[in-house]
Amino acid sequence: MAEGGRNLLVIPGAGSAGQTWARAAELLGARVLPVPDLPDVNAMAGALRAEVLALPEPRVLRGASLGAMVALEVARTTPVQGLVLLAAGWGLVVADSLLEWVAGNPPDLFPKMARISIAARDDTEAAAAVTNDFEARGHPVVHRHLSALSAYRPEPLPNPPPTLVIWGEHDRSVPLADHARLALEMRGLLAPIAGAAHKPFFERPEETAARIRWWLEAEGLALA
Image (cartoon, rainbow, N blue to C red; front, side, top):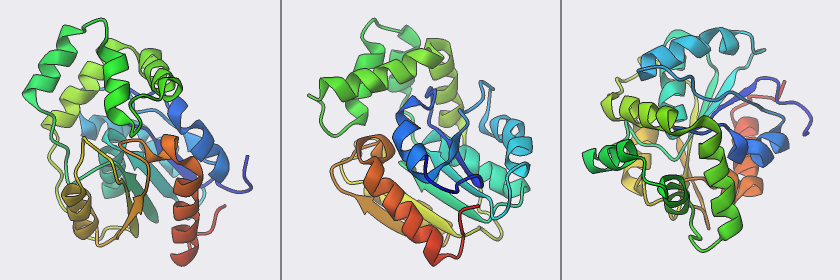
């Protein structure tokens, strides 16, 4: 594990057990805390507040997709000195057709979700790792998480903390324009990761960790 990082907390995406964050979290010494199985984003954020308050300052949250929206709501009520938001926009669109497909729980659900989320769809090893990550939480949690994400509408933070938005250049789920709007709303910086899709922390963990470490240093947010 890298030195430092006790002040870094990772909040993974919908239905993720955090397994795909293992390498990137190790590189920064961060702890991974999966999104709670609760009915809405505000409740999820409230459930994590005590964990965040227990971090030494400067507190930095890293959230991906649903985890990014949860991190936003944590920062609304809890002193947070930095946010790293990945694979996310100003709110996330979840199509009704996607929710219906997930609700039906077809036998190939998780393998298909896994392939959609990575740049190299023919990478069977990577797809299997993402599939295993979903399976660790299970279908009911995945469906509830996506339903909560579909219903969530963010409101501006009156004084957002320093924010880095990370975009995988091949992200099929959240377009560049949505990442850019998130960066604008948060008055933050947008950083691309080449060769990655919706999971840059998994597909390119070294590059993702390097971007985060550079930004932390630039913002004066030293690893505790």
